[in-house]
Image 1: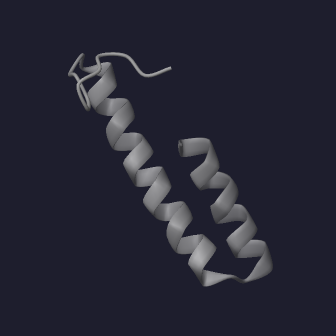
Image 2 (image 1 turned 30 degrees about the horizontal axis):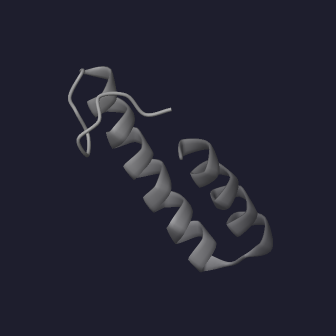
Length: 51
């Protein structure tokens, strides 16, 4: 999710499409939060591991 967010940020910046930039920021933030919660060992959405 973080990688997809970074790709959307780059594409949105290069193509000057603000909606891609916004979606990219949201995906990076959500991905970082999920990664931090997963690293602490908390169950997210009823699952302990996401593959």
